[in-house]
Image (tube, rainbow, N blue to C red; front, side, top):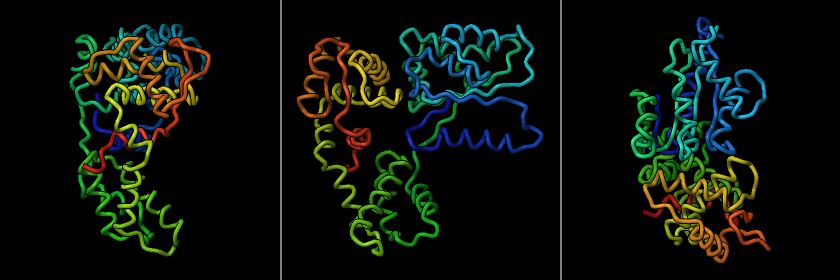
Length: 328
Protein backbone atom coordinates (compact mmCIF):
# COMPACT_ATOMS: atom_id res chain seq x y z
CA UNK A 1 0.00 0.00 0.00
CA UNK A 2 1.15 3.52 -0.83
CA UNK A 3 -0.17 6.22 1.53
CA UNK A 4 0.20 9.88 0.61
CA UNK A 5 -0.98 13.27 1.82
CA UNK A 6 0.32 16.63 2.97
CA UNK A 7 2.27 16.79 6.25
CA UNK A 8 0.32 16.80 9.49
CA UNK A 9 -2.71 14.83 8.26
CA UNK A 10 -2.15 11.78 10.45
CA UNK A 11 -0.73 9.29 7.95
CA UNK A 12 1.88 7.70 10.21
CA UNK A 13 -0.23 8.08 13.35
CA UNK A 14 -3.14 6.26 11.71
CA UNK A 15 -0.99 3.33 10.57
CA UNK A 16 0.47 2.98 14.07
CA UNK A 17 -3.00 3.11 15.60
CA UNK A 18 -4.15 0.32 13.28
CA UNK A 19 -1.11 -1.77 14.24
CA UNK A 20 -1.84 -1.18 17.93
CA UNK A 21 -5.46 -2.20 17.34
CA UNK A 22 -4.40 -5.44 15.65
CA UNK A 23 -1.95 -6.17 18.46
CA UNK A 24 -4.73 -5.65 21.00
CA UNK A 25 -6.72 -8.42 19.34
CA UNK A 26 -5.88 -11.57 21.29
CA UNK A 27 -6.43 -13.71 18.20
CA UNK A 28 -3.88 -11.67 16.23
CA UNK A 29 -1.38 -11.06 19.01
CA UNK A 30 2.13 -12.30 18.24
CA UNK A 31 1.03 -13.49 14.77
CA UNK A 32 3.22 -10.97 12.96
CA UNK A 33 6.28 -8.79 13.35
CA UNK A 34 6.05 -5.03 12.87
CA UNK A 35 9.07 -3.14 11.57
CA UNK A 36 9.18 0.60 10.99
CA UNK A 37 11.85 2.74 9.32
CA UNK A 38 11.91 6.44 8.44
CA UNK A 39 13.80 7.43 5.30
CA UNK A 40 14.50 10.88 6.71
CA UNK A 41 16.47 9.38 9.61
CA UNK A 42 18.82 7.32 7.45
CA UNK A 43 22.33 8.53 6.68
CA UNK A 44 21.95 7.04 3.20
CA UNK A 45 19.27 4.94 1.43
CA UNK A 46 21.20 1.65 1.69
CA UNK A 47 21.25 1.94 5.48
CA UNK A 48 17.57 0.93 5.32
CA UNK A 49 18.61 -2.72 4.96
CA UNK A 50 20.75 -2.63 8.12
CA UNK A 51 17.97 -0.97 10.12
CA UNK A 52 15.31 -3.44 8.95
CA UNK A 53 17.52 -6.46 9.71
CA UNK A 54 18.36 -5.12 13.17
CA UNK A 55 14.65 -4.57 13.90
CA UNK A 56 13.91 -8.16 12.86
CA UNK A 57 16.80 -9.94 14.52
CA UNK A 58 18.60 -7.45 16.82
CA UNK A 59 21.76 -8.15 14.80
CA UNK A 60 23.94 -5.34 13.49
CA UNK A 61 25.45 -6.06 10.07
CA UNK A 62 26.64 -4.01 7.11
CA UNK A 63 24.13 -2.70 4.57
CA UNK A 64 25.26 -5.09 1.82
CA UNK A 65 25.16 -8.10 4.16
CA UNK A 66 21.75 -7.07 5.48
CA UNK A 67 20.42 -6.77 1.95
CA UNK A 68 21.50 -10.33 1.15
CA UNK A 69 20.06 -11.69 4.40
CA UNK A 70 16.74 -9.89 3.89
CA UNK A 71 16.39 -11.08 0.30
CA UNK A 72 16.82 -14.62 1.56
CA UNK A 73 14.54 -14.05 4.56
CA UNK A 74 11.66 -12.79 2.43
CA UNK A 75 11.99 -15.39 -0.31
CA UNK A 76 10.58 -18.90 -0.36
CA UNK A 77 13.95 -20.35 0.57
CA UNK A 78 12.98 -20.41 4.22
CA UNK A 79 9.76 -21.25 5.99
CA UNK A 80 8.90 -18.38 8.28
CA UNK A 81 6.66 -18.69 11.30
CA UNK A 82 5.50 -15.09 11.40
CA UNK A 83 4.41 -12.59 8.79
CA UNK A 84 6.03 -9.16 8.71
CA UNK A 85 4.44 -5.75 8.31
CA UNK A 86 7.06 -3.26 7.15
CA UNK A 87 6.30 0.46 7.33
CA UNK A 88 8.59 2.68 5.24
CA UNK A 89 7.86 6.27 6.24
CA UNK A 90 9.23 9.18 4.16
CA UNK A 91 9.86 6.66 1.37
CA UNK A 92 10.93 9.44 -1.01
CA UNK A 93 14.16 9.77 0.98
CA UNK A 94 15.29 6.27 0.00
CA UNK A 95 14.58 6.89 -3.69
CA UNK A 96 18.18 7.33 -4.79
CA UNK A 97 19.15 7.85 -8.43
CA UNK A 98 19.45 4.12 -9.17
CA UNK A 99 16.24 3.43 -7.20
CA UNK A 100 17.72 0.05 -6.32
CA UNK A 101 16.89 0.32 -2.60
CA UNK A 102 13.19 1.06 -3.00
CA UNK A 103 12.94 -1.49 -5.83
CA UNK A 104 14.49 -4.20 -3.65
CA UNK A 105 12.17 -3.48 -0.73
CA UNK A 106 9.04 -3.40 -2.89
CA UNK A 107 10.11 -6.62 -4.59
CA UNK A 108 9.94 -8.65 -1.37
CA UNK A 109 6.12 -8.99 -1.30
CA UNK A 110 6.15 -10.27 -4.90
CA UNK A 111 8.32 -13.28 -4.03
CA UNK A 112 6.60 -16.65 -3.99
CA UNK A 113 5.85 -17.66 -0.44
CA UNK A 114 6.69 -14.23 0.91
CA UNK A 115 4.93 -13.24 4.12
CA UNK A 116 5.70 -9.54 4.13
CA UNK A 117 3.39 -6.57 3.67
CA UNK A 118 5.08 -3.28 2.76
CA UNK A 119 3.33 0.01 3.56
CA UNK A 120 5.02 3.11 2.17
CA UNK A 121 4.26 6.70 3.17
CA UNK A 122 5.21 10.00 1.52
CA UNK A 123 3.84 13.51 1.27
CA UNK A 124 3.63 13.48 -2.53
CA UNK A 125 0.53 11.89 -4.02
CA UNK A 126 2.08 11.36 -7.47
CA UNK A 127 5.52 10.28 -6.27
CA UNK A 128 5.34 6.91 -8.12
CA UNK A 129 4.48 8.57 -11.43
CA UNK A 130 6.72 11.59 -11.01
CA UNK A 131 9.91 10.17 -9.57
CA UNK A 132 9.93 6.37 -9.84
CA UNK A 133 10.68 4.12 -12.77
CA UNK A 134 7.97 1.87 -14.18
CA UNK A 135 9.46 -1.30 -12.73
CA UNK A 136 9.42 0.26 -9.26
CA UNK A 137 5.93 1.72 -9.60
CA UNK A 138 4.50 -1.64 -10.70
CA UNK A 139 5.84 -3.26 -7.54
CA UNK A 140 4.33 -0.52 -5.40
CA UNK A 141 0.95 -1.97 -6.31
CA UNK A 142 -2.42 -0.41 -7.00
CA UNK A 143 -3.55 -0.12 -3.37
CA UNK A 144 -3.29 3.57 -2.56
CA UNK A 145 -4.72 5.74 0.18
CA UNK A 146 -4.73 9.54 0.07
CA UNK A 147 -5.03 11.56 3.28
CA UNK A 148 -6.67 14.86 2.41
CA UNK A 149 -5.75 18.06 4.29
CA UNK A 150 -7.85 18.61 7.41
CA UNK A 151 -10.84 20.88 6.94
CA UNK A 152 -11.56 23.88 9.15
CA UNK A 153 -14.13 21.87 11.13
CA UNK A 154 -11.76 18.94 11.64
CA UNK A 155 -8.90 21.18 12.80
CA UNK A 156 -11.25 22.96 15.18
CA UNK A 157 -12.33 19.62 16.62
CA UNK A 158 -8.71 18.47 17.02
CA UNK A 159 -7.74 21.64 18.88
CA UNK A 160 -10.82 21.56 21.10
CA UNK A 161 -10.10 17.93 21.93
CA UNK A 162 -6.60 18.90 23.08
CA UNK A 163 -8.07 21.72 25.17
CA UNK A 164 -10.48 19.53 27.17
CA UNK A 165 -10.31 20.75 30.75
CA UNK A 166 -8.62 24.00 29.68
CA UNK A 167 -10.86 27.06 29.47
CA UNK A 168 -8.11 29.56 28.69
CA UNK A 169 -8.82 29.65 24.93
CA UNK A 170 -11.57 31.82 23.44
CA UNK A 171 -13.56 29.64 20.97
CA UNK A 172 -13.23 32.44 18.40
CA UNK A 173 -9.42 32.23 18.71
CA UNK A 174 -9.55 28.48 18.09
CA UNK A 175 -11.74 29.10 15.07
CA UNK A 176 -9.26 31.63 13.67
CA UNK A 177 -6.35 29.19 14.00
CA UNK A 178 -8.37 26.42 12.34
CA UNK A 179 -9.46 28.65 9.46
CA UNK A 180 -5.97 30.04 8.83
CA UNK A 181 -4.29 26.64 8.76
CA UNK A 182 -7.10 24.96 6.78
CA UNK A 183 -6.82 27.66 4.11
CA UNK A 184 -3.11 27.00 3.65
CA UNK A 185 -2.10 23.42 4.44
CA UNK A 186 -4.59 21.58 6.66
CA UNK A 187 -1.63 20.56 8.81
CA UNK A 188 -2.79 19.75 12.35
CA UNK A 189 0.74 20.09 13.74
CA UNK A 190 0.94 23.67 12.48
CA UNK A 191 -2.41 24.50 14.11
CA UNK A 192 -1.33 23.06 17.45
CA UNK A 193 2.01 24.86 17.26
CA UNK A 194 0.28 28.22 16.78
CA UNK A 195 -1.91 27.47 19.81
CA UNK A 196 1.15 26.60 21.90
CA UNK A 197 2.82 29.86 20.89
CA UNK A 198 -0.32 31.80 21.85
CA UNK A 199 -0.33 30.10 25.26
CA UNK A 200 3.35 30.98 25.78
CA UNK A 201 2.61 34.58 24.79
CA UNK A 202 -0.16 34.92 27.37
CA UNK A 203 1.91 33.21 30.08
CA UNK A 204 4.58 35.86 29.63
CA UNK A 205 1.95 38.54 30.26
CA UNK A 206 -0.71 37.20 32.60
CA UNK A 207 -1.46 33.49 33.08
CA UNK A 208 -5.06 34.18 34.04
CA UNK A 209 -5.74 36.08 30.83
CA UNK A 210 -8.05 34.56 28.19
CA UNK A 211 -6.33 33.75 24.88
CA UNK A 212 -8.14 35.79 22.24
CA UNK A 213 -8.09 36.44 18.51
CA UNK A 214 -5.65 39.28 19.13
CA UNK A 215 -3.13 36.90 20.69
CA UNK A 216 -3.42 34.51 17.75
CA UNK A 217 -2.90 37.37 15.31
CA UNK A 218 0.18 38.46 17.26
CA UNK A 219 1.60 34.97 16.90
CA UNK A 220 0.84 34.82 13.17
CA UNK A 221 2.35 38.25 12.58
CA UNK A 222 5.44 37.36 14.61
CA UNK A 223 5.91 34.19 12.57
CA UNK A 224 5.60 35.98 9.25
CA UNK A 225 7.44 39.19 10.07
CA UNK A 226 10.45 37.62 11.76
CA UNK A 227 13.72 38.70 10.15
CA UNK A 228 14.88 35.17 9.41
CA UNK A 229 11.53 33.95 8.11
CA UNK A 230 11.31 37.01 5.86
CA UNK A 231 14.84 36.41 4.59
CA UNK A 232 14.05 32.79 3.74
CA UNK A 233 10.88 33.76 1.93
CA UNK A 234 12.83 36.29 -0.13
CA UNK A 235 15.30 33.64 -1.30
CA UNK A 236 15.08 32.28 -4.82
CA UNK A 237 13.57 28.82 -5.31
CA UNK A 238 16.89 26.94 -5.39
CA UNK A 239 18.19 28.67 -2.25
CA UNK A 240 14.99 27.54 -0.51
CA UNK A 241 15.66 24.01 -1.82
CA UNK A 242 19.19 24.22 -0.38
CA UNK A 243 17.85 25.22 3.03
CA UNK A 244 15.25 22.42 2.90
CA UNK A 245 17.98 19.93 1.98
CA UNK A 246 20.26 21.08 4.82
CA UNK A 247 17.35 20.91 7.27
CA UNK A 248 16.51 17.36 6.13
CA UNK A 249 20.11 16.14 6.30
CA UNK A 250 20.76 17.51 9.81
CA UNK A 251 17.41 16.17 10.97
CA UNK A 252 18.18 12.68 9.66
CA UNK A 253 21.67 12.49 11.16
CA UNK A 254 20.94 14.32 14.40
CA UNK A 255 24.18 16.28 13.86
CA UNK A 256 23.98 20.06 13.64
CA UNK A 257 26.41 20.35 10.73
CA UNK A 258 26.80 18.57 7.40
CA UNK A 259 28.84 19.05 4.24
CA UNK A 260 27.86 20.80 1.02
CA UNK A 261 28.35 17.45 -0.72
CA UNK A 262 25.75 15.76 1.51
CA UNK A 263 23.35 18.67 1.07
CA UNK A 264 23.85 18.44 -2.70
CA UNK A 265 22.84 14.78 -2.61
CA UNK A 266 19.61 15.66 -0.79
CA UNK A 267 19.09 18.67 -3.08
CA UNK A 268 19.08 16.30 -6.06
CA UNK A 269 16.16 14.38 -4.54
CA UNK A 270 14.22 17.60 -3.90
CA UNK A 271 14.78 18.83 -7.47
CA UNK A 272 13.69 15.44 -8.80
CA UNK A 273 10.49 15.50 -6.73
CA UNK A 274 9.74 19.13 -7.62
CA UNK A 275 10.40 18.59 -11.32
CA UNK A 276 13.13 21.25 -11.42
CA UNK A 277 16.42 21.15 -13.33
CA UNK A 278 19.35 20.16 -11.13
CA UNK A 279 21.97 22.87 -10.51
CA UNK A 280 25.60 21.87 -11.00
CA UNK A 281 28.26 21.65 -8.31
CA UNK A 282 29.58 25.15 -8.92
CA UNK A 283 26.09 26.64 -8.72
CA UNK A 284 25.48 24.87 -5.41
CA UNK A 285 28.73 26.26 -4.01
CA UNK A 286 27.68 29.77 -5.09
CA UNK A 287 24.29 29.28 -3.42
CA UNK A 288 26.05 28.31 -0.19
CA UNK A 289 28.21 31.45 -0.28
CA UNK A 290 25.20 33.69 -0.85
CA UNK A 291 23.18 32.03 1.90
CA UNK A 292 26.15 32.54 4.22
CA UNK A 293 26.34 36.20 3.23
CA UNK A 294 22.60 36.48 4.02
CA UNK A 295 23.26 35.10 7.51
CA UNK A 296 21.09 32.01 6.99
CA UNK A 297 23.87 29.40 7.19
CA UNK A 298 27.39 29.00 8.58
CA UNK A 299 30.27 27.73 6.42
CA UNK A 300 33.50 26.14 7.60
CA UNK A 301 36.46 28.49 7.39
CA UNK A 302 39.68 27.71 5.49
CA UNK A 303 37.99 25.25 3.16
CA UNK A 304 36.47 26.03 -0.23
CA UNK A 305 35.47 22.74 -1.89
CA UNK A 306 32.26 20.68 -1.97
CA UNK A 307 33.25 18.92 1.29
CA UNK A 308 33.15 22.16 3.25
CA UNK A 309 31.11 21.88 6.47
CA UNK A 310 27.82 23.76 6.59
CA UNK A 311 25.21 24.34 9.29
CA UNK A 312 21.96 26.27 9.69
CA UNK A 313 21.87 29.70 11.31
CA UNK A 314 18.07 29.49 11.47
CA UNK A 315 15.84 26.94 13.17
CA UNK A 316 14.16 24.17 11.16
CA UNK A 317 10.85 25.73 12.26
CA UNK A 318 11.84 29.04 10.65
CA UNK A 319 12.26 27.21 7.33
CA UNK A 320 8.91 25.46 7.69
CA UNK A 321 7.06 28.65 8.55
CA UNK A 322 8.77 30.61 5.79
CA UNK A 323 7.59 28.15 3.18
CA UNK A 324 4.02 27.98 4.56
CA UNK A 325 2.27 31.19 3.53
CA UNK A 326 0.13 31.96 6.56
CA UNK A 327 -0.57 35.48 5.37
CA UNK A 328 -2.33 34.41 2.18
